[in-house]
Image 1 (cartoon, rainbow over the protein chains, first blue to last red):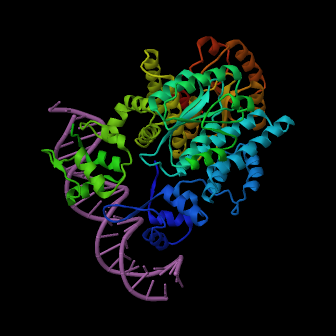
Image 2 (cartoon, rainbow over the protein chains, first blue to last red; image 1 turned 135 degrees about the vertical axis):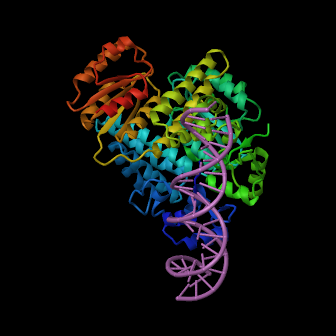
Image 3 (cartoon, each protein chain N blue to C red; image 1 turned 120 degrees about the vertical axis):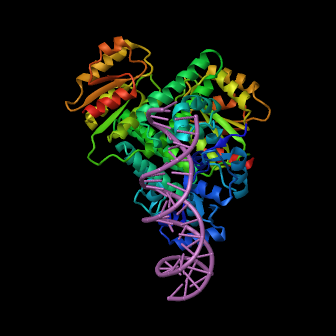
Length: 283
Length: 283
DNA sequence: GTCGACTCGGGTAATTCGGGTC
DNA sequence: AATGTCCGAATTACCCGAGTCG
């Protein structure tokens, strides 16, 4: 995808003159490509990267096909949470997406957005549900809104290099949670990896098949809900034995309890996205 | 094997206008041959060489894998299904998205894309799986790719008017299929409706709650998989009785068998997206 | 030979270029 | 030092009736 913007579009979006954008391109501050005739073309992710680096506000995101700003200019992660909770309970998918795009273009990392904004928001919604203050459908509708936001976020991340290592992963049988998988995928892409999301509720046999077919550098398991730990542990052992040498495995998710952790040898157990992020940096 | 591309095909592949490609051919920037009638034909080698020389990224590499005999639009329409099957089996989420975007910008409606391209593609993948020619993970990974394509497609649809009628819906308990839900949502938005996707695997009580809270003009049930018809029918009766007067209900999906259909009074039973589309037009 | 889809070429409107100046 | 504005020249995108392709 990765749309190509003219200097004028880029300038409009960040609220500066066209000349400034051209100068920044010429100075190398914004990565730029050229047409045969010598016209500059800026990829969306290059512009977002510049905005993040320079802490410049995206004044008019709509001119480059992004949702309008959420109205708050100074974002603090903590303050985003109650606002997100509100929007999710109201079912405002657009509002949710705006917050995510705002946070990312303001320089927050994907793992920060996941760990410090989305996860706490769903925790709060869960608490409200426990007190009878929120309905199930509100939580689910909120998940759908966040899924959409994460799809948009993914498009803002730089394209992985053609020779970047490949990561694949998903959730095992009985686990239908998509949100954590999309978050993991986004974190990996943020670190420059190529990714393929296999999906949720996958039988272990097909995961073994996938890992042997693709021989990825990394495989992730997102564990949000485990009906029965025992069959999973047996499955995991089978998987682990069938693993190609070059493949590292990471495990994470709410369902990764201490007793599971002890019996699942792997390269890294992650409690939060930031653990994954640190692990990726350490490679 | 050295295919000859039309200017239009080349333009699509590298993401510029057809005029530019023709100009560059005329300027000698791209080596070109001519048909007896004077039409330009660009060899694959020439295009690749040009791409290398100018450092220009190939926006849609999959476009140049096509036969020389027809134009892109025609080709996209005719050959979309086998091409999509290939891309999905390979796990090319970007390729899948390109096809969907091409189809939509070639004038195909959302329901046509769903009914005539995506559904047959998954049918074929299912058939291949039945013969042992495809793995489960390939089908699931393909679903994820299509989900992403549908999110992008949704962004291409015009924003609904502020006073547009509201539609909400989702899947009932035991049904985890997201793809049909996203398709239904896209069809509704194509017809100018506001939508809220509630999600999958939803208990009937929360659907009743949702429909009473929001009082939408329309409520959709996407039925892809029903573990037990009987509890569903009982649930549906409860739902139907609790319905606000102004709310129409539509039902659709693979699991909508004749015996289910008979016992589910509603405004419309849909076998395909086009049925939903027609129904929306008739309102 | 018919026909629909595509391409031709040329013209025009809109953008972008680079450089100089404020 | 950095930004915004202005300029003529060049580039690109879009449009159209006529002709070609499959």
